[in-house]
Length: 299
Image (tube, rainbow, N blue to C red; front, side, top):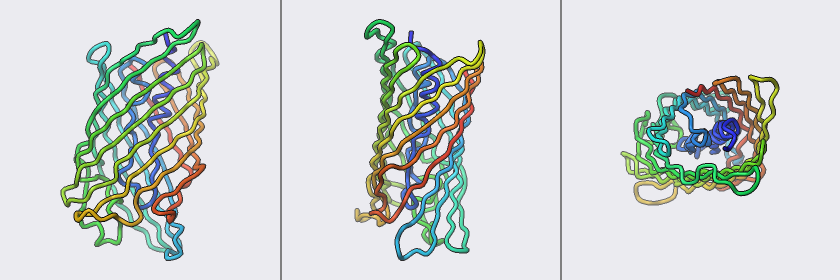
């Protein structure tokens, strides 16, 4: 069988896959990926924290920096051998620093629910190598804190911690492993419907390719480092009259390094993502590096 610990590692790393920028941050795919713990065939409860920072490069802004903190509780449960449900409940803290002015928005964000099916379960592809494939569909509920008049505070629509809208979620996970090494690919798509104020956040597509390796430090402790790349495309937002919203949309390519420690049923992950190439908000927004950590318990 595929090594369970390797698949656990993939879940933790790929669950960190949201990159947005200043005016494009609020509706990110953060945590959307069902992730590769889905492949581990274990139930899960986890806590995740991420920090992202972005700067505005427009000459019209003197010193604008946005910082986003994302806290999430995730639960995974297999109700049959090949079907599972994942529930994610995030809390957001968004901070904007413009010269000496400080603004923030915080609160519960939108709940996401995913249902997934295992299509290929550890199918042999050769001696000591196997492949795993699953796919999922879900929804994002408008349960988060949403203020349609946030512009009155000189903040963009996407600075809301919730989107005030439903979204359809799709994802797929493909993993190939040979002994204690492997390669994993994940794709996520998010389709936004209009918000309660008829504002539509941009649709999103992301892909991630990851290589990983497992090493035993003792009979109980294992270390699992990994590295990879991530690409994403984010559509522009639309006002109620269907015109484009300035400073939204974009695409980026990122490198990623991660290290995981596993002890019995406990896992700890530290990860860092660094932009390689990017163009957000028409080139006016620059994404900085992002840090994250996650603690998970398997049962």
